[in-house]
Length: 548
Image: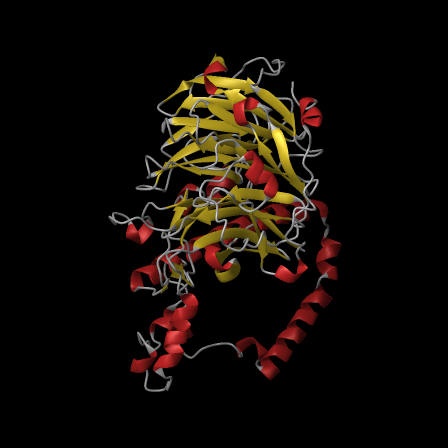
């Protein structure tokens, strides 16, 4: 099966025109080899600890007759060993220089020792064994070239338990979408966040970069450079503690292998990272929400441990959002049916809103600094004024003990948007009041929420399956990327849609040009016709029933 769990846009001009191919230095080889060795050591320690426990149980429950019964088994092993000796199966993959390529005194594996000795040439022209014309190299460069007028769309995709990020190029002028390259991930991806703060080896660079932060079922956050192709390792890992602080030996002393793996701490997450938000004003700051019920603040200048730890929720944190108008204010939502807002510099005072179900998505209004929106598991979308929350006080690092039976908070409006969880929601950054929602009911709906009076403009099954992600373009007010359980990306252009044009008069509309393609995908022949026949506008009387 194939699915896409999250999407992210990259604005025009942010990507390097011709991405560079990775060139590993000796320092990179050493770093990756050391990390591989650390992981191997942890795995061996965990295995040894579990085997020790098994040996204790074995000695307590088995008698001497069991030892006698094991003698034929030993003989069988010896016989098998003789067969290996005869056919030399146990040495077929040995190397003459194996002694120099084994683990070092710290147990680390020289994974790339053979690679270092290979001849390498910066271009095919310098390699005497390759006779390729200039045209071949030029064709390859043209295929990899990203125009300043192109957007990138990043898709967190999983196919048959293999997860990766597909990097799409979206050529708006040509209504064309294609995969440029991909990035292999170690675990199932849950969320994506684009950022331009130079990180890793480019730390301190004066010009903006092009990076994607990925939250997965692992407790770390990986940050990859999108301007580099064929990378084997992320540029930065948030929460990558040294192995000495998480050794299996320490775990065993505290009561058995892996028993303390889920114990929360102030430095790193210990469970899946479910939400990421990059601060576009304080560009070195990232906030993350986790299944360990904590929110953490990270400084990309020192990514090993969190700068701050917040605990406004009692359950998993599903969503986090910075306010671009008040860059220190953070909005969070969790599986405790709560939304919280607080100043990250003084987190002891928290504004809280109680909901009827668990949080799915959070949004600040890009046009109005005081308003935010939340979608929930029971199919609702609510709007709130951040100035009108219930104030609660708790000590930083300790979860609030507010009464569990809090009443549901009053909202600016409540919209019954879908029949199941509203798993995708976004607002146009340019068209005031243009909202899109997506759900497990497979429908995508476009709304006008002007003056807190939501009206459905369009309702359509875009055929992405259950909708997991819907995002407006950062450059075009009426362009949306969509993806879900069918594992394909679709770009929906609303600019020429009659219903949208009636609700949102488009200035300087392209009257003289041919209408653009409404749905753009990798498989254009499989998509519905580009007309308004499938749109289901709801009349005002139906909408009145959705208001509380």
